[in-house]
Length: 158
Image (cartoon, rainbow, N blue to C red; front, top):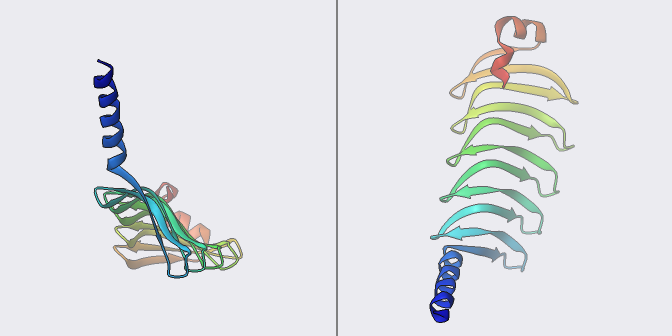
């Protein structure tokens, strides 16, 4: 009886840990290139990728080898470059893009890797322009908030 219980727990352990494996790969200089979970030879769960100098390049989640949920991207000097949502490997929803000083340069609504909705452009942390896109093509532009409000529902910005 004890051996059956031990065998059962050993089998559960092997099955559980053989499915998800933690993977790391390195650059020729010895610095970490990427790390994250693999299941059935596909990226899954949380991953981090690095520049050759060791600085974090991007991080986020995978499901069946496709980027999902919220991701962060960084420049080689460690400042944020952009961040946003992935759905089944494609950029969707709101994305934030940063200037080299770390301030939001523009925010855009994306659908399937294309601008689709509004882009809000900033200069020195002040909103200067709004642009509307449909399937990656610009359809309208506003440089003052009052005309934007007259022509649009603010609920569209959610």
